[in-house]
Length: 468
Image (cartoon, rainbow, N blue to C red; front, side):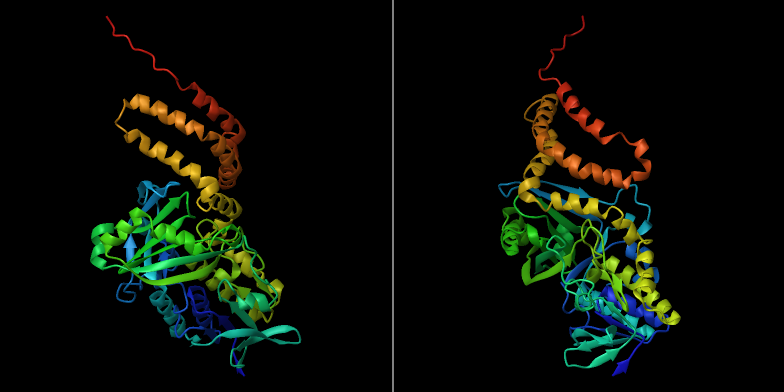
């Protein structure tokens, strides 16, 4: 039996960051990857946000196209809006805004790359620091002695001993289950996400899409679908919580692909499908049960993806680093109890990951009720939004008349929009500005004013008289 100070199950970004940090802190560390190399078993691509460069500057400056050929920076995001007839009724392009304070984020919104390149790249930092990487090894159980966790067992029965095990083994975490921290996620805590990966010539992507990094397809006939562009291809995927599907997820993904507008995009990009993928992704209001005696869960295993859009790479790396630091301190003090490892929760809550989860429930609720409820919400939201955004460009009648028509049409959506705003929007605003509520108008009063304002709009045009 081989003995270590720390065992990490999983060699994704979180596991590799934990292994790197642990080795740098002098721990004899091993981390396991079930595939032939890190990234082989993962969903194929990811978008990396600017805060990764802010949080891990010395590491991320090493991520270049030479190290990661699929890398593509993008400064624009396109939002498509699809109505109940499957027609793209409009789109809005967004770029970094004037309020952005971190310099790199003023130039690009994401760096996109394939996990098959990114994961091995980050794992090299861990092995360079002295951690041992064992590929093609599936960990199937936790090793226990007198009821206490003391290591892991692989699929061949080989045992590895260590006082602390970090679970970085994804959504279906063996470590979480065998440690008793969680049997399985509830159906409203986890999503299933199918996606198509397409090849497209790099020159086509650059010439046609320009500096677009990604797109979101907001629709009344399928859950919100994401599109991410890489150097030589792109993903099209969508997801929803397990309790929200009424048909096979591929039925809805194929609805995206079969849109007339989308087929045109595939044609002009000369795109060819490469692979169909599917993965499970935890999506929680707030992480819980993240540690026990001798065990810490990080990344997807701990339920750390962002509560708004479920981005998971950054939270995995942050929690991986913290877990290794807590493990090093616990081993030094010879106290690996649940109480000692509770410092993990104390520390991640003080980071930007913790700050994200301060409004986790409100972010989760509004996102679940808006783009992921096509029939209930998007069926009225898309036409209402496009009425406001697009109606003014109609030159068929005088603009003043069109504005009145638009206002009257928007008013017709208020019976559905107002309850939504009351139930989801105001709780989010109140949570975000909870320290400044005295400076914000009372939500109840504001909601009572909006219909009155709409009623004040003139129903008949008053004739102007020329001055004599």
